[in-house]
Image (cartoon, rainbow, N blue to C red):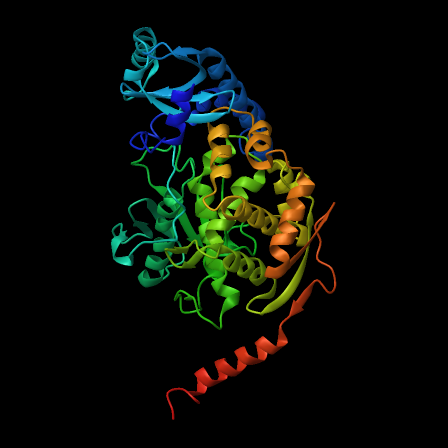
Length: 475
């Protein structure tokens, strides 16, 4: 057991070359299809997702039961562990006593156990890999991540409205100019790289053929009844991200850039990042995590986008505060804001069905659940541990078959109550501009926002001087 504990501490990216070849989704799909056919796929997506969660749990439980046993090392020491995956050089295990995940070179195991694993690979593996490898990462949280615009090629397919980048097929139904289309493509292409740069075992593009491009459709909101007035959405049934050109473009079909005086449209770019993040990590839906995890992650990626294809992961409290406030107040400078949000026990147990029922209302409670999930995600990624280690271990547990409530209790709560977490968030954010009040129902009340009018006056003065050139570069 001591030997394995050391391996857990030193676990690296050993499985990076084949993470996506054999995943939980590969096994789930054939079992799910008859269920969806029975209930009517697309008729009630929330119900379909609930079935997927149930079937996934049954499959994982069966897999764990089949592979849980005592394993012997070549020196005679033993460990009780669940075999998760293996290739011909190493095996990945989860130790139930600690629910930690790590890798062991096959050479360190006894001859009989080594033979058992190799037989499993030969009879049930694919491309030399058996089981469901968890993408182990242990590096520090990056300060930033960015991609150069000249590294994102975009080509048009003949004279059609179809365009192609490295990872996307883009349908340009509104005929926006190529320069604007290149900027949107850059934003979309950067999401996977930024997600992969994080020290988290995220299921990025699980179940998707690496050669298969993802689909983006840019259209007028009025032409798509499901779009409404939103800047875009990800359709979980088709996997397509729909982008509302009306929310992002000027009348001449030019892209609105990140400008100081256009916050009402600048903020819409966050929606693209949010929805493409969902498209990249759609496997989270199959893993049965509460809705705040996938929504909080998508909001985190949107909030930390400092500029197109440029993510800033330092001082995230500034990005989070700006992201939360601008949705409601645009470019106003806020001195203090009271946040009347749902109790954490309610939020952290809210499944996708309940989440979508609130989101469909498009009211104050709807957007406050996104704000609260972002703040909770930021806490676990940066405040609970500077490199998000506890959240990383939580995801490792979930990906390796541990029931989500158990993984949450073990790694996120760690003996703390939900009320303890609420007090922690209150203490952290009170000096940073948010005063939390946890309630049975989220709400926005009169007097919740205090604008810094002095700072607003200074801002207007600076904007006027920029516009007229007064006082700039003059003695």
